Length: 278
Image 1: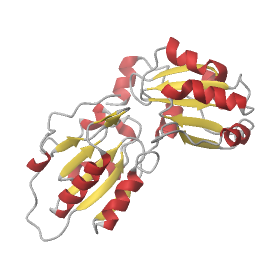
Image 2 (image 1 turned 90 degrees about the vertical axis):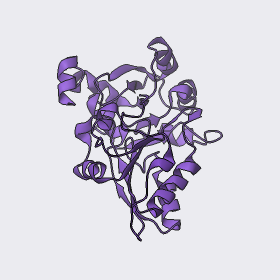
Image 3 (image 1 turned 135 degrees about the vertical axis):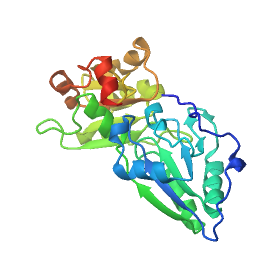
């Protein structure tokens, strides 16, 4: 889901004025959850409403952006594959600079900041600079999107555990495919669309049954959520044939077949889904 800055966004970082205070401000690393604004925690909403400045990522849904107070400057610092609006080092510098100016900052990230969200990197930098920082956990995509797709991450007799894996790496993937294939866990791959063929090939080569159920969840927890299901050996074809776009999760495991009985969000018509998230 690609988001543009909301109407109260500003482009010039320097335009956010410092507060007249001898004390440093505070940075709250806030998980916005997977898209549905009703899945925000009460604390997340309170931090958004009380912040002097909001820095938000690409996967923060438009519905959540609409909750930003109109008078609060909001800076879009999102990243997409091979396209970063603001490099991570500059985001880190901006957080430090604005906090040192006395501003209370809401650093808003999709899902949870500590699950493939680089929240740990930002927190380390802030702590090194002596900036007060807190973490507000959010529902990570693997938990939220599978729930809205009717796919339990664990289920008695089918899966006693789940494993989250990122298919994105700075250089090349360093994954113990043999270990994943032997876990007998539900496997959830973040940022894996472009690696769908590799994921399937390596897991099958490592011993996972090629007929293991698999699902692609596109725009999870949003009115336009789409779930495409098949088998592990069909994964790359499913991405191509259904033109699946990011953001999307790949879910692999026997629990995927439970969606036949447990799907609930897909049974809502568009109007009901939109009202649910209003």
